[in-house]
Image (cartoon, rainbow, N blue to C red; front, side, top):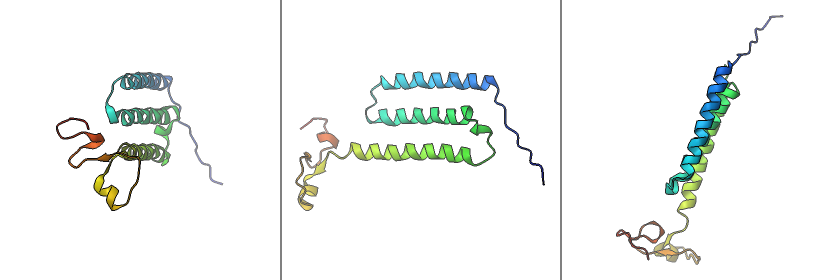
Length: 132
């Protein structure tokens, strides 16, 4: 039988300390970002920070950075895919409240959703900034 050399990478304590500090900084950044009103960008920003924190934990605490397999790529890639899917879901959800009068009459939509006047922007705003 052939003898296989299985070695495990020993992670220095300094790496854990730096990772811990990075996670504390990212947590503080999350708290600061939650106190700033960026409108529709609040959720993508929070998800982006969470994705970075997840990557730091996976790469350093779980040791995927030193893994010789494809597991690091798959793990981080799955996190990026989840972020993209959630971002697209929130983008879709944020524009569901408006339908045009033409859409309502063409498709026979009888809905409690407010109709948008021609030339109006999202959420009933006109090009001059006034609300209906």
